[in-house]
Image 1 (cartoon, helix red, strand yellow):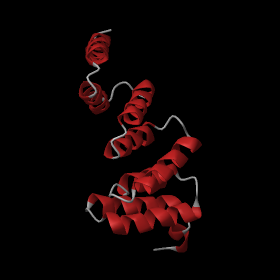
Image 2 (image 1 turned 90 degrees about the vertical axis):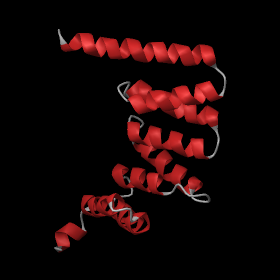
Image 3 (image 1 turned 60 degrees about the vertical axis):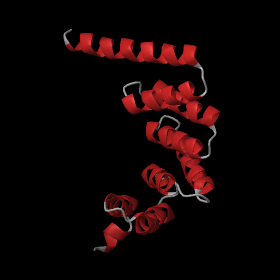
Image 4 (image 1 turned 180 degrees about the horizontal axis):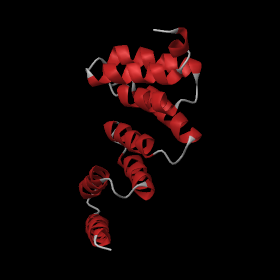
Length: 150
């Protein structure tokens, strides 16, 4: 490894991501933290640390990293989705729905996010809104199918 690589936060993020893919989350966190030492505003490192801290007792740390990523760039869909997941683990359904709604506002093509938001609304017995979301999703998909032929 060259000294130039060691000075590049993206190098450390990529190393961490490789370990994440291998299921070595604890080791990966060290690399993401190293990236943040070099660049405290590295959104990829912040989001990956937010994803990696999902165990009981780590949720506040996860939110801290995800909030920071959103503060840097409020249009980062991955940060909103992962923040929604964290709120779900905390059983904070209102905040979870809010995060998924923001993610869908930024990128309505994410089927899993539509599903997650609909599941929560169904759990909360907000059936009218749940049905509205399902219809909106179908209309959006139909618009995508139609636009393919334009």
